[in-house]
Length: 469
Image (tube, rainbow, N blue to C red; front, side):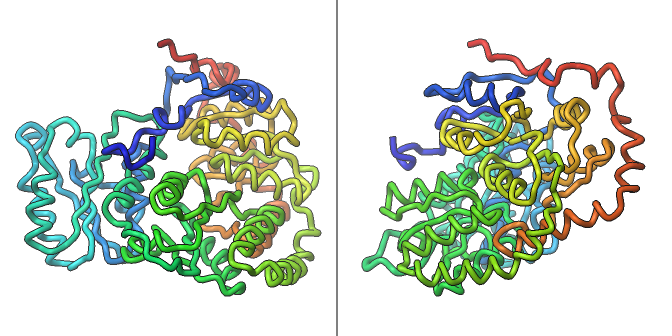
């Protein structure tokens, strides 16, 4: 069934059989994912995990000429502070109270839309639903139709239910479904020679590192949805092809553009490390008849970073990776390139669509711990306690816990790790803690302080169970 045949985007569980809970080894996950479906798991204890509303907000918060209204309680809108910090993007909340959850919040939504429009005059207003709206059944559609006609502004309701999925990444899909339904315009012929470059979670510096390479090849980019205007999303159907900086995040809209408008998707891994950047550049260059220029560009860029790569900062070191599976594939290659060994893998979700990427990790030891979890620090701490690592690469929240085990943290927040520039930056960051081992050693003396000894002795998967249907 085509994506747009459904009124709303299906959850990752229903569409791709996604897992959000797993604890085993690379050998066990390769075996468990060898069939046509993944056996569901449940977690009987959960520390924390983000909801799909967080991902939905991330997908719409960086769009110029648009305003976001979070229809729900004030607490539901708190994520807007994070995604808009340091930016000029406007966001509003309807701030529903206890009475509104029973009697409805239509009037507050109407007032919020009018205020957002009068203060910003945006091209588009996105309304992000919340679990409260799923309970009180507000007639949002009537408000949207009424004020859309009155203001002459496109108002798009994105229904983030919050109860149907355990995979927060489904929030991206809900937003992209709305884009395909309400923003992307019919394809105009002839096709124009530009590239749709999809990015959601990447930092401006990471995107810039890739855009520089593409512009050096004279390939025009339509960067969406982050760092773009509404017009960029509307014109996405007219591209020669699309590529994503991370297919796990953007596969829904790329598949939708291919199904609905015939815009082919270029399949690559995130451009992290020499091999992945080479593959990324070569595949796109071939689409635009720039293969010769690409060879010259790649040769020059690899010469520039040759000195740093030769320092091998991970030589003889064990590295724990926490990131989505597509990035793990690219980073594991970079770790090997810089002399290291992957000692553990933690990813936020796994589904039938990306399980094939596991084969790209076949060069790793089959005993490498493999965890599917998001926000479950105990499982990561448990792995570090049983399988010590020298470096942790991943989220800044977990980096703190890793440092307490004497592990050198290399959080990806605020660091450029895409493209050739990113290789040099990773080397630079990795060399810094190696110059001073005292800091990690001091923190390591406090190893596991947040957990009792009996807790750390438990098996890491003692509360991850098979789901009984």
